[in-house]
Image 1 (tube, helix red, strand yellow):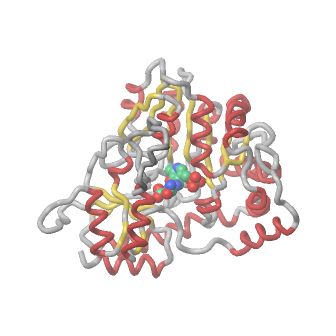
Image 2 (image 1 turned 90 degrees about the vertical axis):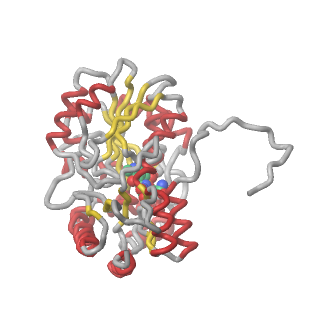
Image 3 (image 1 turned 135 degrees about the vertical axis):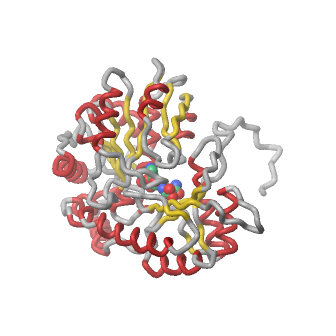
Length: 392
Ligand code: PMP
Ligand code: GLN
């Protein structure tokens, strides 16, 4: 603890209920205890060396100064081409695509751009941990709607019941962190119908768009004109290309919304690092890496699930993302069922595998006896974790 200096003026916190994120906490605990870290979501393997070479080449070619504010044109063009090829969505790279410092900045900037103090924003719990503090920072009112308990499916009548004249935006996330659930075409059509008579904007967090398994398709908001016309569609190269530390993503929105987005973007980051954008623009023109990603992660999911099947965890279904949730009912520690968060601490310290409690994704810490593992790991890492979990 740093001693408080009597010379530092007191401040009133803008985020009084926020501490260090659960992901940082569990990664630190895993490092401290030598546990296998299946907590925070990131790969423990390298990206394609060609991508690293492309960044080095871009630096050597002198791409080291500010790029244009919305991003390197070739990268925006490659993204527009991909949106058309994959989702049939035509967007103008000049006015409808901006390169961001990862999805995190894209989400915050979208909220800053369109949510006024007192506006309501609906989130579907459990949800990614940045959404609620982002809404609170702009003085918005967080309206929490639960995904259906157990299945994590969207409950459209609950969403409809939460809509008021003050609802400014709804945030959705498919494939879903933490549950791995994927919205179907019927879900997206139902959402499109629900929003059609309203002025509600959509923030569609699609960072796991290329991790959809079992032959299913990612149902991007971009596929649905009634959604695309009111949406900020958010992607992350960090997830798709195994480079979470690069923090580069994109946001796609109709020109009117994008011009408001860019007003904020130019004053919160102005631009995103240049050499990575050059490297990504060439890399993105090749569909093979993202086309092959579902098979790559489905094999890891199956390996991990097969191993978990012989442990005492209850396997939950998951069709997407690199997360696997499990139930911990009946897993007692000293004859006691621990709260999820304490169970994860115990699992890390005593069994040597870090996980994330689902309660961290709820405002009220709702505990449903479920924890999340990340399987974006080398096979030997997954095997090492499974060997430890088998002892339970
Ligand atoms: N949304 C979700 C659902 C995520 O899981 C993540 C990954 N941390 C992000 C947004 C943030 O992505 P990025 O690392 O590109 O900022
Ligand atoms: N998205 C990652 C997860 O859910 C973590 C990113 C972060 O640490 N902020 O684990």
